[in-house]
Image (tube, rainbow over all chains, first blue to last red; front, side, top):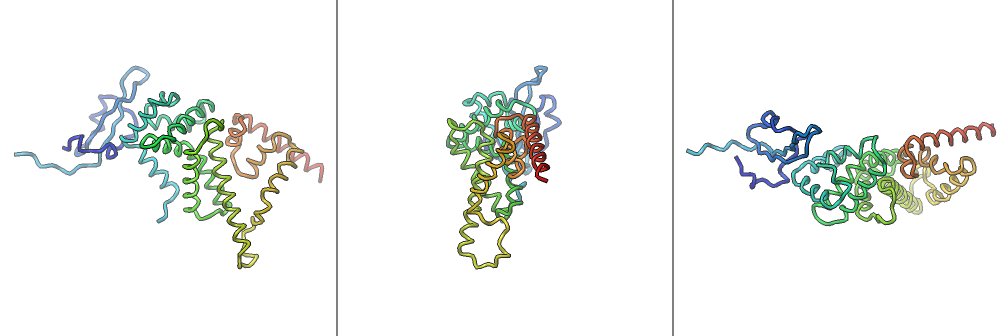
Length: 64
Length: 240
């Protein structure tokens, strides 16, 4: 997995929508890098998050 | 290489969806009060494009973006991009009217609209402009048409084409005089609503767009336009 420092902010694209924390596992896909940003709160006070995603990255071999 | 108009918008939207763009937007939010309530560009554009909402508030937001667009660097570029997206429905209407008027090829019109709008935003004098969107859109379209008329006039002076091949809307030298006469004659019949009638019936603006320029709500513009056109119909019936 790339370090987030290797990615420029221009490489990360916003996924439309705002998400609750427990929804993140349903959004994440393998072989991509994500940056999660605070995006305010729902009317009920639940924190909302914006998700930025990189293009798919190639598989990196496991270290032996 | 030709870019379809919608592809240009897609490219701009794409550039507005990066983390880098969000960072620039956050910088604008720190400086410009009217933009603070919007956590991200999508929320801001949504608010500007919805029919509901106060025109005064939208105008404040656009003024804030125009101020930010005067700065250099990523912040200025971000603000300019947001202004283009905010004005896109109006720019789209200008493009349709220009195509209908055969001002140029589709690509030429698209390039002209975008370059003039960028120039208009970056050069906007916020001390002298009241209604940001209406002023920018009206000036862009006016300048495109004037440039086209000047060019058509120059072509006429040295043209070797047959008269039948010349576009019907030539006579560009008299256009300004004709428009002034039309305005004067219409004022005799419909008074202060003459400009409203010209903007809608002649220049192709929607009643809402013309209303914004004249400081009217959409409902008021619609009502006054209906009343003015009824007065014109009554006047024509008397003639016949």
